[in-house]
Length: 160
Image (cartoon, rainbow, N blue to C red):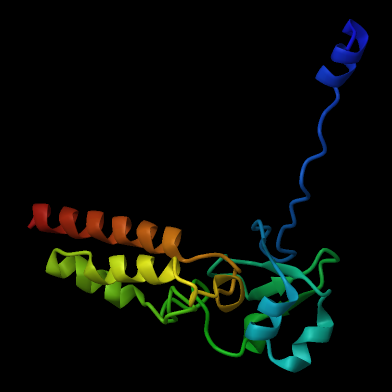
């Protein structure tokens, strides 16, 4: 490879992966496949989207899924409530794990339920790509919520 070849490659920008944003709120969408869409949308809503799409995780946005053509479906065509659109819905779509279970662990000073979920999430029974509305494993969201609630609980105790 000569100097010119090196310099040409050094200054050629690699193409970036396309980012698709919700047409309503502008949040970055999480890519999902047809199987995920079929698991979460009522059958009548499926023809409104391309075979694959994106999940809008913005809690206050009424859009559930959208596609690369900015076509969208709202949360009212979901088969059941999904987290984070509905905070009462399970964080884990595979095993039904809820925020309340995380809060119980923290109140009891243990992480038993959370550890059990992490183990289940690594098992062959986990079907995150289909059962999670965003097509991703819930473990990072469970950990994030655990830390947030734990920190809030500790701050509340120290101010009392």
